[in-house]
Length: 99
Image (tube, rainbow, N blue to C red; front, side, top):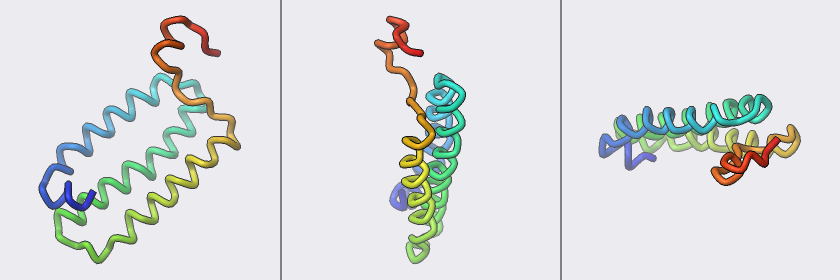
C-alpha cells in the first residue's frame, strides 16, 4: 500500500476500490450490508492512509494503517457473531437458491 502511494497509483486505485466494494455490498442482505459497511470503513481507510503516507514518503508512520487493519480483522471476525452470511455467489443468484 505504501508502494502504491509512492508511485502515485494509490490515487487511482482508492476510488476504484471504493466503487467495487460498494457494488458488492449492495448485493447483500440488510444484516450483511451493515456488517460489510463497518468492515469496509476500516479496510478502505487503511488503504487510503497507507497510500497517502507512501505519497508523502512517511514510512515511519506505518502503525496508523496497521491499527486500522487490526480493526478490520476484528470486525471481520465479528461477522460470525452477527450471523452475516456474505454476498450470494453468481451460481446462487442465477439459481435463486439463497434466502
